[in-house]
Image 1 (cartoon, rainbow, N blue to C red):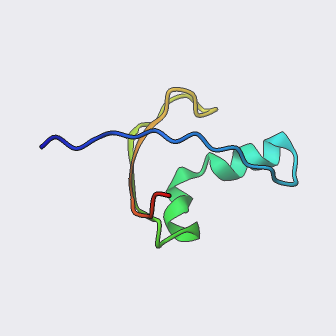
Image 2 (image 1 turned 90 degrees about the vertical axis):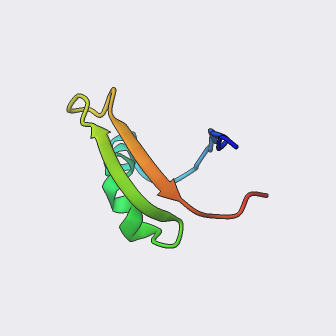
Length: 66
């Protein structure tokens, strides 16, 4: 059986400037350090532009779905 692909859209409200939040969330490789029980592996597929556009990463995650 072929595995299913899912996409999840989330909305977060955080204190900080857009630039501060962008800088933190654009460091995707850090996700395994911040949430080690959820983000098991992060692989960069394509670096993309300096601002992150067209960057492609592969995430291996685990967690419960509601």
